[in-house]
Image (cartoon, rainbow, N blue to C red; front, side):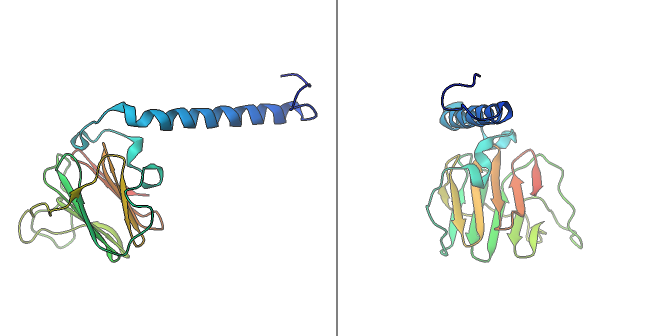
Length: 178
């Protein structure tokens, strides 16, 4: 870096700062451009993918809706129902240890719920539920209903409320967010 050209008059530290900023922007553009080319992994693997975070995905709809939405992931193992009251996701099969639900003597682990009270697994008193029907939400797409956003990724489904509280659910693992 020299003292001539458009950066003339800026301190060396400021020149380095601007150069690093430009490099980071270029790196971000390259990453975004290559994400669709990474291929489709199965959400059952529980592998990490940047395509699952709601803030970083392509949208299925441009605006938040107030109409209920039902969808399933391309693997067919996870299906969710969304409304302005919350999100209910069901997973057909999983390999993680079934979570404990206070006061529940029945099965757990197949149904998760996110609403104004937060994220929690539900007690499956009536047995393991069937996956509800819904349109396929392709990997990298998201749906928003009211204050809730769910994104389909190769690492499962990620659902968050407006405050960033939610969950990521895949065959191999579940994670409470944030």
